[in-house]
Image (cartoon, rainbow, N blue to C red; front, side, top):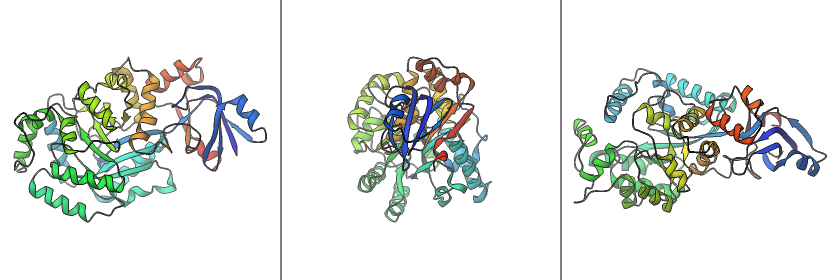
Length: 411
């Protein structure tokens, strides 16, 4: 048993503790509170003191690690359509400029960078199997919740995906890509499998304004894109009135429940957010990617007002300038000044852990949680006088100068 103390402890789920301590035993948090109280309760325990802030590791709830080698190869899109970026991405991947070893080396480096920046847990989406994701040298990497993404926008593609899904190892989680690229019957089959195996069903949703036109009328840039790729055969359902948007469409297909993770949710209304809330589905925001692709800003204030706690994700190196989750918090703080810094930090920790179904392990400092948490420090953090100032700095100043995994002192 060991007591870990610091001038500031940020549990996330409860208020900041000044001069706090965390009692650790067997790799778990046994107790947490004010240092004086903890020392009094456990007088025989050894104590390790840190000079600044103890907090839970961050959660990057949406990444595409297998695209990491594409960093720097794409420009932001204010002058292009979203489908033009998708077309460029498909073309670039088809070129196979990098070997498998180079691709693995790129995401291995990214995983180490995520770990060194204090990320404890990652939600990763990919189109290919990479056993190399299971372990980086030394084991110094975040835990990965890996999901294999299925695309099938027409009958032929849907049938091929259904066959692959049928033969997929049950330990491998499957998910759909987006409402315009994965046919409805395929989405329903994937969701059925997720429910049976208790896997997360993560899907891109409401990322681009053109989704609504596609689901309402079957027209627009996504229809044009599918026709250009010879992938349009009318498999998507369009009623006489159409769907009001992606959320109604997903509800119609029976995809929404408490194990569904809706990624992006930029173009959603209050009514749609209420549907999401009532279903128990989770949201993951990717502000850096949305800005890079000129897709707009998610209505974060409305989400918070409705009692929703989104997760945060950095998306891919092909759609973002950085994979740094501290930067994602910083972007939210700049663009959504009405949101309390504590709420933004909760998104990058507890919200992500809940979205990835790991809230009993990660996302907050609480009794029973993993004792793998971080100590962060910077000149600004070291001179904080109150908890409000502390939270402002943690969220708005970007990645702290010093980040250290505390678990190493007692492992």
